[in-house]
Amino acid sequence: MEEKKLIDDCFYVEQKKYGLWDSKDFEGNGLVTSLTEEQCISATRFYLKGRQEGWPKPEKVHERTVGGKL
Image (cartoon, rainbow, N blue to C red; front, side, top):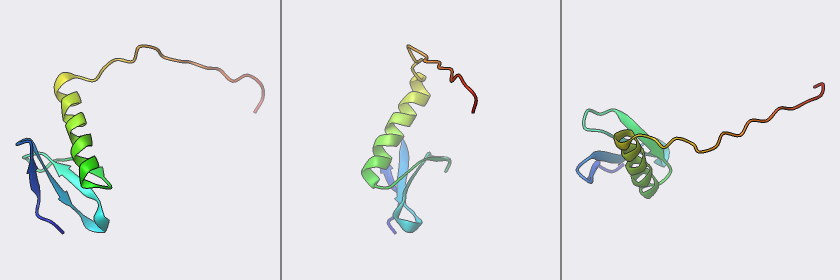
């Protein structure tokens, strides 16, 4: 297992048991778990951006009804 790496001066990534990759903030709170280091870094950047700027509202909501007897 590797030592944790500081990414973008914002969060750490490290390889965990079974080859999974985890990202954590400076307080040690878990952020994202991924299969590869690159996916972990990319997903954590996306997550932190959404947390900082807010998540976009969906433009459309699709609602369906199933008729009949199940």
